[in-house]
Length: 384
Image: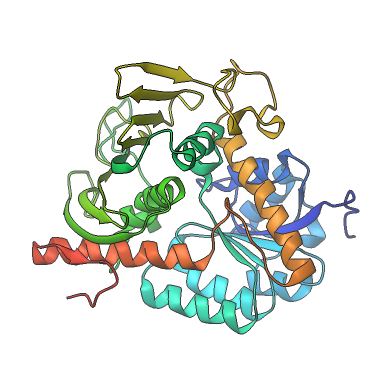
């Protein structure tokens, strides 16, 4: 039986995202937090027991749980407003393309695809059906990241000169109390044309630089290495040349002991700089040319965007975190989906689709080519 939705609430199905996945529970909580979506159907796992267990945990009725995603799309496409693709990245091309060709709107966990050929295939399917397709980059859902973008746009930092963005993690070098190495999901240990660490971590960095500056990568020189316990690339550093004469550096790693998830953004302008750390999400450090240093949070009289009521689920001093950031994005996606239902198109400054994902893949392919050639590589140029 189909669940009755509250007025204005949209219906979702999940492909992947079981209770044993790395991200499924976060998506299930976030999509329903602000009552914009209802999770009503799913093919959460290829293992039926896990599928059923997940449906119970997420409150999905058993008649709307499916052993195959194709069966779910055929049976549910007239009842769901979108499907969320949370299956491993190597399966995204097949699943996203299949859903779009059936006319099913798609919300896809990053990365959209494993290489530029896959992303082009997805783009062709999206254009052929005028399909709804967005990719989830949740870190821009943090209120203080949105505040930082507002400061950049208002010129508080002056002309943007350069940036330092990093996302170090330690999972590929960590051991448990008995000295045993931690076991990541098997698909994360499958390096293709683009090593998985790029798709897993650098996708966020590329998105955030674009989100904050509006600039695009032009040329890169990169270094990559294996430092962890597995035979995959797990540490990458890159010098970047961006449009608007902006320079920058990226570092992302899964072999950096001491960093649980060390996402840090530093933007340097002609008049001021800004620094934000994901582990201290409520604080934004501003440093001005006259030597002043200022820490602002949601309670500060200096903030604009972060003070909006939609971000104040509870008063400042009680930090909003990862799930709340995801929920902010899901609310934005709901607005986009409603626009698309009404007009056949959508516009948003918070939600991103194929174009940015394709640019990110071209950036990563250029970084890999640069490592191999030991030289600067233009983004979007033919790769060696």
